[in-house]
Length: 197
Image (tube, rainbow, N blue to C red; front, side, top):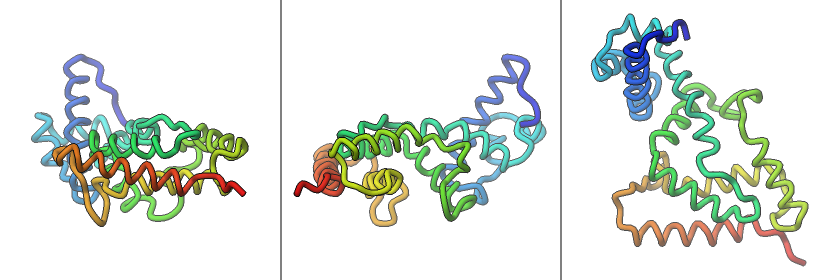
């Protein structure tokens, strides 16, 4: 970022830009987002936006990395109950579809392979340690803890806003969401259960 706002009015403009741009990027991605729409909706101008963020890409980075902790830690993990964690992720995707869309655009337009962010920016160490401990305790099947986590997250995204099969919304009947939660919970439980010989 080039400049930080120094006044309360500047801080309010800065916040409006972030709020409007979050929705713009969530809907259109980096390539499809338009600075003109952002500045019009944020009631500012391009010069101010570029002063704060340097470029459209700098603005996306500020939003993405500012949201990364929420994206990664949106539902605290309980490695002794990964099925419940998957259901809480499902619910969060319904509450904040913009967060999962931002992560998806970062994947599509920035990091098509490998981890979503560089190692220093990854925030999943505590999850991996918790899964490894649950494995050591005989509660979760063997396997790379990262792969177990990735599988549970993928299952939780079956009906997310970025699903290529069906994107659920919070406006759907609660009974339908409850059916999905039950199916998800049972499926994850079976998928991650430790082998009992």
